[in-house]
Image (cartoon, rainbow over all chains, first blue to last red; front, side, top):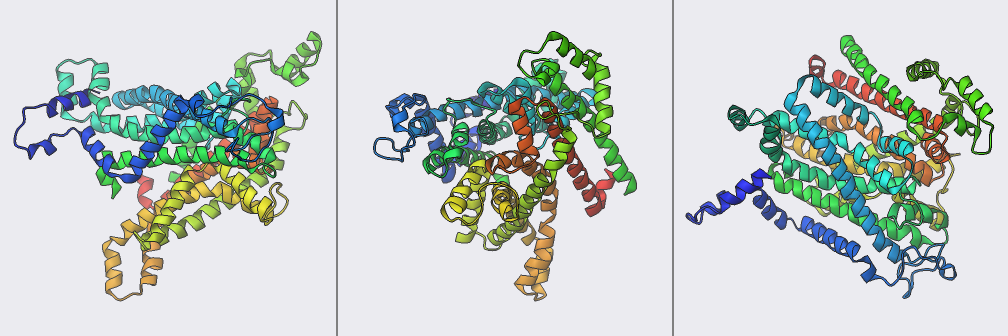
Length: 303
Length: 307
């Protein structure tokens, strides 16, 4: 964060000739300017903000309770009364999709949070100290990467037991290695800089050097990885719930709704259509935003 | 080359050992007594449980149990299912061909269609064709594979009656699952091929090829394609793992037999002996495939051998 801080200070410098303004913009503001010009990314951001608003105020957008059972209304096709139809228990799909947004956004943020909180310090330590510490951390990560795809998350859920909370933990843990790799790689590159040498010469403690001098340089790739990571986390957690190993009934989770709707595909297409569209729109927006952020932070990569 | 291969094989031994520790610990980390689980929840006398514990060696020190687990695993013995008492190895062997068939078919779909889409997009850069194929690719990355599977079933089985929705008896049963599984990887391959073709098109030797009057088709197929496929080869290993993981979900969607379905059902049934076997086998296959990919780098690009 110190980088952003010092950058603000820079931009508050006394106004010199107007031409200098461009040159002294902070990297973050430059990135933001570039992001604003990327139409697809702006739309994606708008979609995600709208979704957050809907998730936060879900009860305001529907009169139905997402878990209340209404047997006489079961398996109704979309109509004016239930715009996305109802499921086998007569629950309103639209209400469940709205409340599902809360769960999916939460899953994305919590899982990526777990991965970042565990992965960043490990990557910093591995890259900074090198030697035996580094090789043992790298080995441990290689082991985690030896599990194909969703399998590591499955193994963790097996041990912890199936539930929404445990699926978030499992998805978060399986995303740790990619953080460690990114941070470690950047640290190896950054620690050769003269200012790190200078900080050491000034007698800064090692944790100060790692967190105040090296970490700020890794913030932008970390932001990009996190936005793409949220997309992956939402997908993986939805897969776990679809398999019955994540959110348990009657929680209105999109993956679990698809799992429940599977048995009624022949008679109630709406049960397996709308939650799927919801997942796809969220993940698509997150991916487009992530791509946009990557191009904005590193314009060279865009070409 | 032989030393390189040997070094790679030796390099993956620690991973396999660590994997065995992890898989072994699944049984000991899940809450509950394995002997109790084997006998089921119904009232069994404490004596019977104690007898079974002794029989299974569950009272031995943990390291003794681990070494016994490894010794058995080396003999291909992963114990018996708590539920059906069938040997786990036998169950895995029954399910493996189906998963292998699905993964390979998915990978083939992804590579063939992905390369085609990527080349078209790159050669016709910035055309409508380019933009639409890249949109398809982006959707492919963002679409949950299990939902795509459900959509395919609704469309091609329930509405058009072209392909069966479930089962794994014939090749017709393979079409929808393979496409559902491969679609995400197809998108990744298409994006990669596009950018790689665009890079190669800028090379001097392409200008030379055109300058000497070769037809555009020969330039694309003989000069561009070969050079731009190298990064694709490197990606196959990664995508194989992704598809192997994806098959867990796809098998469930299409009620298709396979390792993934076996493992998931075992987790839900608390049949942990089967879970251990399924997880171990999947990870082992993945490690082996990555090893083969590593070795193929050394073969394709001799510089790698001297790293």
